[in-house]
Length: 96
Image (cartoon, rainbow, N blue to C red):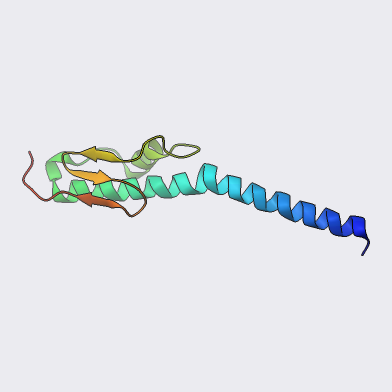
């Protein structure tokens, strides 16, 4: 293997790793965040049936999905708080 072939392989591998990293930041992580938000909304609807969303899960996922990631630190309402993937909770109480 010549020097130029080795450099080409290393360069292509580096470009591939950069592309995978960029893809994960732009698509994969926001998709996981949208799934987490859907689970949070479902838990709110389970605990507070009057606050349940009338949309399908796919519609809720699509409304939560943002290319490039979210533009906020947390979501909060009177039923619960969502702060990240797996970092959400539904408040206890009797809200109407």
